[in-house]
Length: 432
Image 1: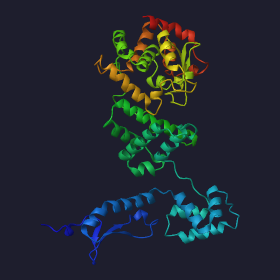
Image 2 (image 1 turned 90 degrees about the vertical axis):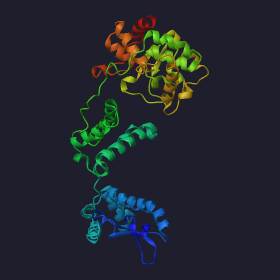
Image 3 (image 1 turned 45 degrees about the vertical axis):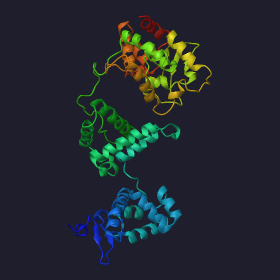
Image 4 (image 1 turned 135 degrees about the vertical axis):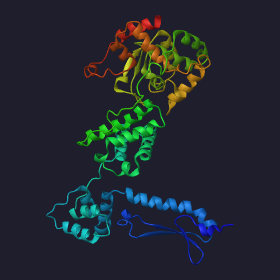
């Protein structure tokens, strides 16, 4: 039997006294910030103890190296100034208010001379010039800044945070940590964007890739505009083969299928109210699930789809008022009884990912009657689109009812179509 001690793992060696030690050379690029050529860690007195502790120690050293790699030069510079010259120097240094004529500039120059050879040149340059240089914009910072911008009143958006973290991880896998966290945005190329696209296409559908890339594209546009950067958005107009809407992606629900479903939902007032509201308005499920009591306007017989404390809206044009059919009005009126203005109309689903839970509940009932995988609850929205078209509703009014963008500047002026104009066309759908 081979002696395990003769085949020690990488970075492990046995000392003369019989104990085990972890030995790791510091990468050359980090030797200016880690003042030693080799890092040592004690692993234990026995082979078993050393093998048990090795993964933990290795992870600690890797984390140390990663931290030093990722620490911005500006952070190092300010930290050194604070440690060696004091808080006042650190503050004027960070604020960039050190006048070249001040005597205090000699303090920075002398400190820079002391740091020569033991500190990264860029840190020395910043200290010597008494000017803190801002860190370059990176893909990592792009996503962070975009998340901060999208959070209303600094309230954490868990769903968006999770999505952006997933995108950040995918970027690191596709491009490498250095490219994502430390490479200036100006050095990110179209080839990088295409590499990311190709990585995503290996594990998700083309339309899902479009949505994922769309987040980065929006984040890049935000940062470029807000920071007045003179560069193009390399994620703009990326070609994604196989993406795009297809008439076979999801089928509209037929009148016969809807009639077949109604008895299955009537036993549950919430399920029935949701089904009827979706069928008679063509609204998105998340829009209906996220209604507050005050969004149901019984006086005018309509729903006000608008941003509230329960959920965001998909697009700017999603904000609208939709006339209600008599049966939808009655179902929602019953849901509204006893509620104050800001109470959720569907409290069971007024929570993060509540629309997903509502969808699962509705789909469970739908599948007892309809087995075609191309027919889902969202098919009710397709149904409304088709029925509006088939009853002669003008496209612009159909878009207004469904909350779709017309992609024209002129469409953003005014307050939209009157409720009675929309009701006139919806009545034809309800009475068919």
